[in-house]
Image (cartoon, rainbow, N blue to C red):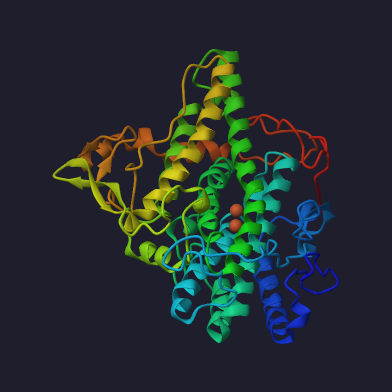
Length: 472
Ligand SMILES: [Fe+2]
Ligand SMILES: [Fe+2]
């Protein structure tokens, strides 16, 4: 198979679409519907062109190509990472046998469900972010928003390709429905709760790309281990694009924190609203919100579904191959939290049913890197306050802590006490109003809104004041 994309095709791809006329026709029929969706629910701000990275092949060096182009001319394509010769299933009851190039009949329904749930999040985030362009704090940020948007669109293509190529008529129907459900729709909402909330402001956008996109990174990491090889290769390629989304979130929050810290030091006060900055306690409340709703995306601490997916070889653990155990876990146990009699306790359960928690704890470790980074920025600026991740029981709707009232510090309290202090922990209407009042567009090359520091470097070696977007 050629790993270079065929760019003369209507749908750029490295899966030899030309060799499968039926599949090619089916995807070419889906393409105008995708474009219609993009026009209806994609970014609402019209830009003449945007300095975008486009995936044009899956090889290590040549996969990303930069240039200005109108958003609608972005070439959404289908790219899978290189096929590993003789790849073996790395876990579960089929461990050591050859990875599947076709869907095993007995796992068809489960695999399809995994693809649909993953696929549904991709267009959802584009829908959630569609109005943000109007209030971008700089052209650099506007470009990054659009880059994330087109790539989430490409991730939808990635899942739709798998549905079309391997799941027959049902797969094609599911691909249609991915364009019918809409974020926040009353009648046909997106599947997962966190993807039905609009992303109202840029602080929320940076928190979303840091915390919620990072859930995506971890889910893709588990699917990259899948015994179903086309899914594994698809996800391995998506993870490379995801790295940019993580960068947008990490450095976005870096820059907010840096600006906040500079204003606090300069004016020797925490109350930096009058100087147009975002006070640290508001940053902390946004962080509390986005982290806790993102934890819900990992599902409950006990799950027989996830045990079945693992045993079947469909969905592995984060970095499965680096784990030092037997990769089957049939006799292993794991400790999970339970709330009993007004106390948080630990109990041992079969490790297979605790795999959601296993992934969540990998995610926690990763999230903490960001917090340490931001605290270093505060420290370097001479501010002695710190940011922190709230306890994993805080503000949860899913799992062991759903229905319990847990403080950010991890104390179980009664519902009234929690409600009384909620305004200290989660963004208030006043916080939203204040942050929204700062959301004024800055579209002059190199200039930044007053609430955010400039980035340390530009994109692809370009200067920060490069004209990343030409507006109409
Ligand atoms: Fe994505
Ligand atoms: Fe993403």
